[in-house]
Length: 297
Image (cartoon, rainbow, N blue to C red; front, side, top):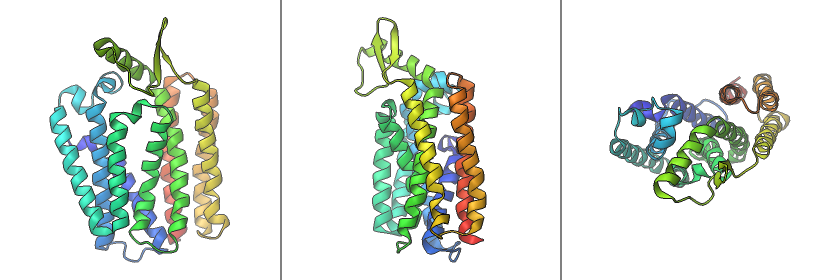
């Protein structure tokens, strides 16, 4: 059941929060303090809960796209997954409350958004992508909010950068999962005859068709990546981070630029989208390393 939390994603989110905290305090002093540990635990619990609740709501699509996941494979019951998600949400919010009221507010907001996203927003193009982009970016601000000071604005740059990259990645993942989502939509229509407002598909004489132009989705994804590349220069340009940051972030920027090229070249290849999504994730990880390097070295 722990695998449903996506431990890798949870640890990456916790690392993001700790980077936000390091940026706020401008160094590594107190890295192993109770405050840091609570920040990491809160983020791991809430991120993990969000992944579990997403599996709970997304069973039909996962039967097509990811049949080996615990619920569609029968390894875990939907009820068991729901109870596990609730317990994780409670743990994460309790940890946030012990840190500060600012962290608790962010935790409550993110908990609500994770549930609403999994329940309905994931079926809505763009608003769902923006929601996930915010949720990923917010972990950096959450970490900085634990040590609220005059450097908090700087953490917003990293938050915005992460948000742009992840909005782009979510759109790429939408393109990757399009066939499974289409089948899920058709199955829901066939069983209930009901549609949800804002869904990405509509029924026509030719079957289920995408409501939004695929080219427009790609343009937005590419625009977000370009904004992320521009934002990545701000910390070094204004002297917030050292040259070590600039050297490492150039690698991340190179990956982002390569993804722009790949999206334009492989628009209708599912395997191409899978590779691009993975590359964007690696690029974001390298960008996180760049921020660490810029604070420490």
